[in-house]
Amino acid sequence: MLNQEFDYLGELGSLQGVETLPADYGQPSLIFLKFVHAILEIRAIAEDDTVELRIVNEIPERGVDVSGESPWKDAIGLEVTDRWLLSNQQGYTDAVQFRFTLTIEFEIIIQLMVSSSFFTLFSVQEKKWVVGEKPL
Image (cartoon, rainbow, N blue to C red; front, side, top):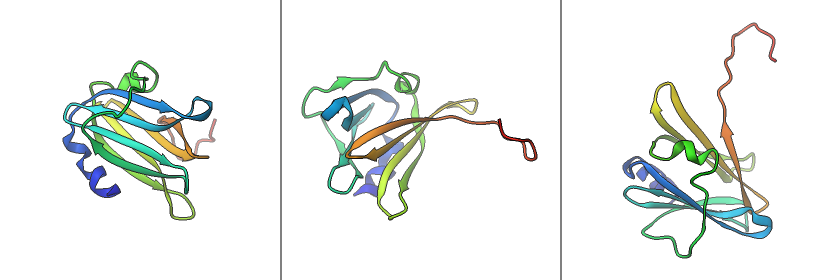
């Protein structure tokens, strides 16, 4: 169901909120992205450190609202314009990445990667790159 749920993301509308259910050490293993038309559940599978996605109608228990925290706060009100499933060197799908776009000049790219049964959150930043220049 991973690809089917992922393909459906373009029809969910704008992001309205984000909740997590913290597990050990406060790191989340379950994240809910609340869109206008549905909720996307993103689960870290402990047995093999993979990602599972499901469209759900409600959040089963009250989580921690992280909508006001970076980088989520900048994505609230925006739609997902691109999304990626990422695989590790062993072929397991262990991360997802979302691009939330307002205009061509304003976008937020957020990556969620499973590591040791929990999610690590990355905010992907653009780096201006000019061929032939030495990197900073």
